[in-house]
Amino acid sequence: MTILGIETSCDETSVAVVRNGREVLSNVIASQVELHAPFGGVVPEIAARRHIECIGSITDEALRQAEVSFADIDAYAVANGPGLAGALLVGLNYAKALAYVNKKPLVGVQHIEGHVCANFLEGGLEPVCAGESKSKVSASPPFLSLVVSGGHTLLLAVTDYDTYKVIGSTRDDAAGEAFDKVARVLGLPYPGGPEIDRVAANGSPDAVAFPRAKVRGYDFSFSGLKTAVVQHVAKLKQADGTCSLQGLIPDIAASFQQAVVDVLVERATTACKNENFSHVALAGGVACNKGLRAAMETACREKGIGLSIPKPVYCTDNAAMIASRGYYRLAAGHEDDLALNAFPGRMV
Ligand code: KG4
Ligand code: ZN
Image 1: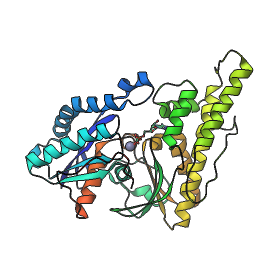
Image 2: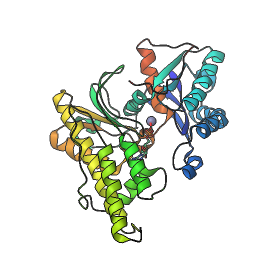
Image 3: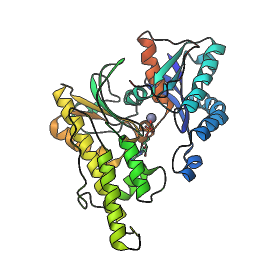
Image 4: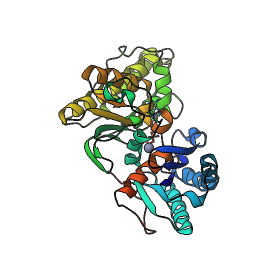
């Protein structure tokens, strides 16, 4: 079954063609980062307008790269939440039009479940050497998924291809949100996550003792850590008098990153053991983080837990993961009609 997937939930317009939920024939992504950079964050109105401008040509390009035509597409999958309302509506209505004109099934996909499905894409995983994942070309349930994105930090119990149960989530800021906010405090350009990752490579993770929040169960909290960084920077500026952080940013970035990574790794590996899973699947934009990838690999190897880490292109927003999730939804008997709406605040 060949599915065309569409992703427009935030600031990436992406269209992909995926066969049988796993074989990526094409995955075209148009990033809007440069449009939003001057504003220091995503401007919803600009995002929606840009999706409208390029969704047609991105779709043509996805078909061209996959060497297929609309006649070869068996169904249309689209992310319909969570995300920015105006942005979601562009992809949703485009998918509806394609499904209607081509008389093919339409299926809505929960964006976060889509992120998890990045782990199903053949050739989509980094070669990690922990446990059973060593020889695998892609992951398969059951597993525990740690989803770390700009808007969400979740631990999901994925017991089969259609069952995603939240067992832990953030009480306040998402991990990516914390990265982006701290980057701003340090004067690093938008988007902040990759910048912190880059700068942290030259700093010491032990330089500043930032707090690791202890929240009951498998939940997370990053707002206290964010405040600690803000206060640390304010004190340095006062002491210095010149308001210059020059030379200190790598150490602060590395110490902050380590604090986030420690909590994510500890929660994920503890939940994995306690809930009787033998495999952890990373997902979401923050899963690009080099510190997180390395620390997860070390911890999982030590504890004998299998680990899969999607390649960076499948961690950040992309339509291949949406097409994959759409395939498994259709396989489980779900199908939507033209009344399908967008749900900006939709949760698993
Ligand atoms: O999954 P994603 O592309 O979009 C959402 O669904 O939110 O995640 C975007 C988030 C942003 O907060 C971005 O700063 C963060 O992922 N991110 C990173 C890295 N690359 C992207 N955070 C830390 N280190 C990175 N290398
Ligand atoms: Zn996302």
